[in-house]
Image (cartoon, rainbow, N blue to C red; front, side, top):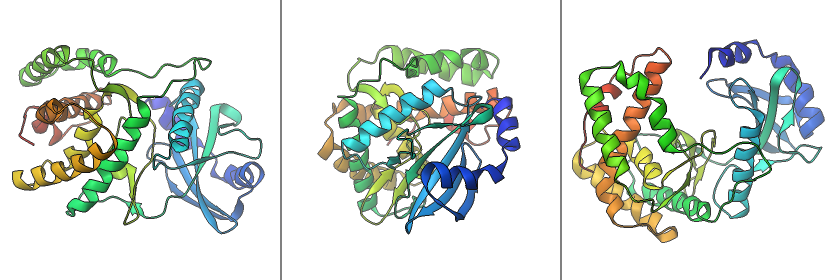
Length: 304
């Protein structure tokens, strides 16, 4: 994330929100509560007894064409009955409202339940979670981006190329892992490849006891579908091998009920997981942070 985004995020006048919610979404000003500003600036509000979330962003983080293309994808998924946080239009009928000074806002219905915990142990939860992701990927196969919007979703290949300078300045071990994974990725067939969520982790899933509802579509990108599966399973990294395997099997049972992919991708999961962690390490280094334990994970390819 750019330093300019942090500056405009922290300078956003929260007192603007009451009028914004009341006028553009007919929400109750007294119900507004601040949720977070870790990424977007998020507020909760109510309207006629129902909860909603307002997300405020700035062009310094997401250009408007990108936000509109992501919204197009999200609305398509909602129409396909994929369990996602459903966007709601403003009074104007628009799903993205342009504000002053480069800010823009959107709103979505509050999903029942709570964010998934990385400590979940119930394999039935993983099965339901896999089923939701399977629905998303099945719908993705038929999706066509809006050609009138001047934004194209990025590819994993572009992400991978963009971190090359950072890896070149890193340790010998990281450079070796990057080279090995580059060779692996070049050898993959363009099969079971399409538009993915991009950050499919427990923090971006709401669990209500029955359904896993997928939220926070900030970075959809073209990738092999197995990458979204790998990102979910990454949260199991530190668990015993037998537990990882049981959770992975449950996840895929649910997933394959909704979306069929080649069996080869199960054997490729260790590569996809290492690939994702190495990307995360490089992004952290680019932002001047310390990758911590993720650095060790990026150098290991473990069985799943």
